[in-house]
Structure formats: C-alpha cells, structure tokens
Image (cartoon, rainbow, N blue to C red; front, top):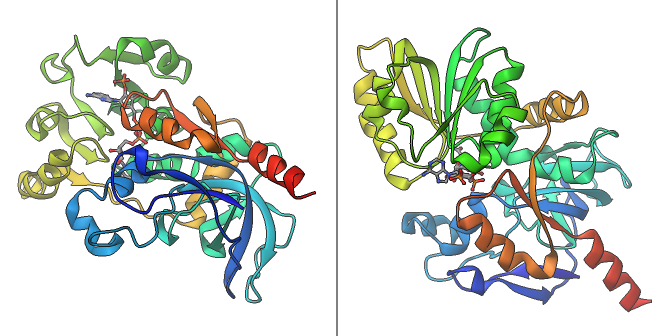
Length: 333
Ligand SMILES: NC(=O)c1ccc[n+]([C@@H]2O[C@H](COP(=O)([O-])OP(=O)(O)OC[C@H]3O[C@@H](n4cnc5c(N)ncnc54)[C@H](OP(=O)(O)O)[C@@H]3O)[C@@H](O)[C@H]2O)c1
C-alpha cells in the first residue's frame, strides 16, 4: 500500500510517498481503509521534532514512527479478535494522534477506543475534518465553562479549531467576537460570529470590552492583554499559538489566577469517544459543519503540510486517499 512516511525530522521535504506493508490489527485494533485524512498542527510539529523536549517520546535523533496523519474517516476492513464495537464494512472516524497517527496511508490500524461510527448523513470529508479540531474546541469551551448569554472572544478564529469553536459557542448560546485577518471575516460571520475584529488593525485589549470567556486559539497576545479583557469572573483558556503562549498560561496564568475570581489556564485536549460521538451528532444535525479550505491527493501531502504550517488556513486541509486506493487497486488487477 502507499503511505506518506518520514525517516528524519525536518521540513515537509522529509515526507516521502512510499510503498509499505499493509498493517495487521492486533486484538483490540481495527484495520481502517482510509478514505479521507485531515492534517493538524500536531502533524507538522511532530515532523519537525519540535519542541525538542518532545523527542524524548518521539525519538531523540530520528523519529521512531514517522507516520503522519492524525485524523481519519474510512471503512473498517478487518477487526482484531477483542474488538466489540465495530464490524467489517462500518464507516468510522477518529483521531489517531494518541496511537501513532498514520492516517496518510491507504490503510491504518487503530485501537477501537479512538473511533466512533460515522453518521450516515455526514460525508467522509466532514467526518475526517472534525476529530481533533472539533473535540479540542468543545473541550476548550467546556473548560471555560461556556454558558448561554455569555460574551466570548475567540482569538485566531479562522483555522481548524477556531471555525469549530465559533459554531459551537453559538450553538451553546453565546455572543461571539471572532478575531482573524480581514479576508476571513465573511466566513466567520457566515459561521455565526456576532462581530469580527481584524487583528492587524483592531486591538481587542484596548477597546474597553470585557469577555466572560476568551479562547486563545492561535497567534500571540500577552497573557496580560487577555487578563485585562476578562470580566470580573471571566476565564481565559489557552488552546494554541506560539510556544511562549503555552508557558505564559502555564506559569503566569496559574499565578494570576491565585486568589482571583478570574481563571487563566491551558487546555490539554483529551480525545475520547463520548466527545467524538457528540461532535458526530452535531455534524449530523447540521449544528456545526467543517470548513474545508483545500483538498490534496496523497502524493501532494508535502504541499498540504507546507500550506498548513504557513499558518493561514481557512478551516481544514484534507488529503483524499480514495483516489490513490482506486489507482493502486487498478495497478494490481
Ligand atoms: N491545547 C490543545 O490540546 C491543542 C490541541 C490541538 C491543537 N492545538 C493547537 O491549537 C493551535 C491552532 O490549531 P488550528 O488547527 O486551529 O491551526 P490552524 O488551522 O493552522 O490555524 C490557522 C489560523 O490561524 C490564524 N492565525 C495565524 N496567525 C494568527 C495571528 N497572529 N493572530 C490571529 N490568528 C492567526 C489564521 O488566520 P489568518 O489567516 O486570518 O491570520 C488561520 O486561519 C495550534 O497551535 C495547535 O498546535 C492545541
């Protein structure tokens, strides 16, 4: 089968389209025939092996696995003998980041607990785009104790997580201000944002507004700017962006929260079937939808990774594996 792999850390130039052996599922695993895969920031961070500390787990000098592709939607091709939730032919989707990824391959094995059934009326693209981004957005809003009537700010609202966060916040009844560059404003309004700010021209931290919840999804703002913009009992949840943002929230955020009614914290998203199934039903009911920016064939995964890493995707970047599976089946006939 064909798969994208990398044998060294580095830029997207290390990604190689290779012929590799089709994996065999162990007892608790499902073999998935991948239809569509979606990229996440985790894919390019792992490919670079940065931050370096991460290499303690992923391989000090060379990647132990080198199999990118975190989110997948596909068909169950085979099941291990202890698998009880799925059978051959089921359409499923899931986030494989915690089990070695590998979604950029025509087939991949994953433990059943990272997967859920794909609702029938949700297509493979929508399902593949959602697992990590939508579950992270959901958990971020939950950590920030989202409630109807709240005034919330989403900074870095136009990428994979942000586009889901805007829709989920509206679904929960909040009033949403979305911060993104001007070219993304129409999209964000379509997704339900009540107001939009252009981070290049408008400074949310000096316009006198106070928010019950701020999600820091991408870009960089000082934690003091976020704190200044919180309501008296407001919460700031740091999801992503520049590395210094993580350390600020971890250390300064904890200190600023001590003895204060305001809470400033990091999110460490934990994929789980319950939240993934919730995302599946929100997609099925039309409450949220994945925004698809670009689609690439498997062979063009390096270009897809470069585009995502440049940091200005408008929603999600997909890799279509159906075309390559059909092509290699033709070649074997
Ligand atoms: N905490 C967790 O558990 C967790 C889980 C998953 C991911 N993450 C992290 O979350 C972050 C976002 O992930 P994602 O998938 O949404 O990324 P993404 O899709 O690559 O985000 C792209 C978006 O970021 C916006 N952006 C870039 N620079 C910006 C800036 N300076 N100010 C405001 N917005 C800016 C872009 O908008 P413009 O084009 O308008 O600039 C673009 O639409 C990443 O850092 C990722 O590592 C965290």
